[in-house]
Length: 237
View 1 (cartoon, rainbow, N blue to C red):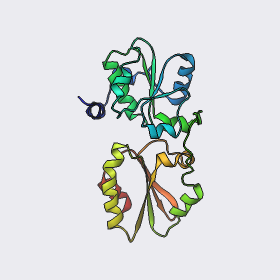
View 2 (view 1 turned 60 degrees about the horizontal axis):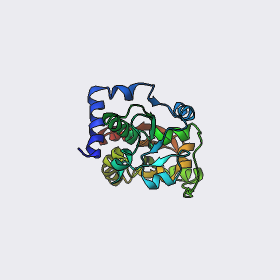
View 3 (view 1 turned 60 degrees about the vertical axis):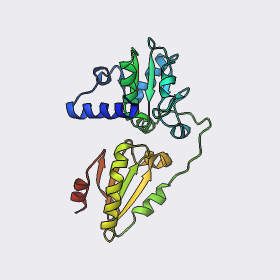
View 4 (view 1 turned 30 degrees about the horizontal axis):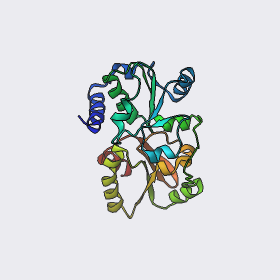
């Protein structure tokens, strides 16, 4: 079974049954950002694993974290080097990849795997520290530039997304269709969260995908998580 299929399986089982891995649901192992930070202080020798891509990792990460890309060719090799009898911390950007990583590690015999709810997005929203060592400088869009985008006589639908995000990819085609079909009434703006960290923090975007609908320059509706084209059209009409 590939890791990609495992990730889909984890998401699918959770969606259908309303419950995931028992340990994953246990608050002892599935921690909020602040709890995660405190637990790391309690277990300073435990490895902290960031399963995002190297590009994501370079934009900022937890102090002393090691990058082992969930989608990388050496993922299994690197994970197998860890001591299964000792605590391990795992996190990603919004929680999906780290949850799948934690479930896989537990199935392989790891006894104490701590995962961070909401990943780096929740960590940043809580104003917790991250290292800037070798960080790629990314100014991103300013609040003034964002305000200029929504300053329109048309409705403005803003899609906050990430390139690696599965639900974001699933929504992209129909958002393009809506932009084309409703060009006279609506503007669709897509904002990559990885390239606009500060803007997302100021707008309280702490999950993806997120849609914001502006009417007369005012936020009229928002949605967090996957939503179908039909549901979006209901809001637009």
